Image: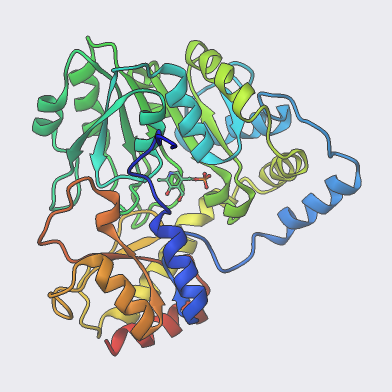
Length: 382
Ligand SMILES: Cc1ncc(COP(=O)(O)O)c(C=O)c1O
């Protein structure tokens, strides 16, 4: 008999909903990925590098040219200086980065504070390292950090806090004042920070992303993680990176070299070329995605869903209390997919203890205008 190391883990809702969307022919606004292609220059660069024979292992830490581009992007975006050789590691997606960072520092019996709701890979990564997650609920209004609850959750065993800004699934942003407050709270404690910033360039309405990279005190104890998949519309490339101070990077690489060793070489070459040629790509992303958010929200305005436009990410939460208050959100997502042809994600799956009264589903608007119009037509008649 197998005694599972992850007894509560099954197939994720993302797989389930994407499969159901495919089976029923529903529009898939569940899993977060664009239905449009990456910039042509980036796609062409892959072919060029494959043809040029860049098809063997890259350095374990990542292609030097790509690490250099990450450093340049960080300097441009946040005015922070990091060293490409000792602080930047390219990983096969942010998920692998999260896993390796957690394995590098979490031991048996350590506690890790994660926020409820949170992205689904954090908890199993902590549990596989022998740690225990302490779930701290975000404020129901606006999904901000609740410092009273964080204080109450801290213990001598707390070894890490996992932040995610912009936040999946709610789109909430963490402010500079909140980072300062967090820094004060953990100043004299031996606690690492993992800051998941994969949506760092998807921030709207003129707001700026507040990166832990730009917070010197917090960065000294942090792994900051991002994903080329989100920024360059290539989620299927599963390429991301971790930025951390040299001592933490050294520990992270001890795990990374045996879990992943390195990432797909021609993809790293292509990303490095494209980033060098198009530094403006990241500056244009907020406007690009804000237009999609606004189009989708304008189209949904006459519907019976209620919502507040998200501040970041490419997900819009919508409240369905006026439509089917009798259904919990999993039942609602299944019903919407089967009966109304639009697949979504119920947000209870991001919680340990979902609030019973909550009636929210998440819709991904990283889609072509035609898809958003089509989906909104269906959602407006529910
Ligand atoms: C908050 C968050 N972190 C990490 C990831 C994983 O990124 P990647 O596809 O680069 O592994 C995702 C993807 O959906 C995400 O939403």
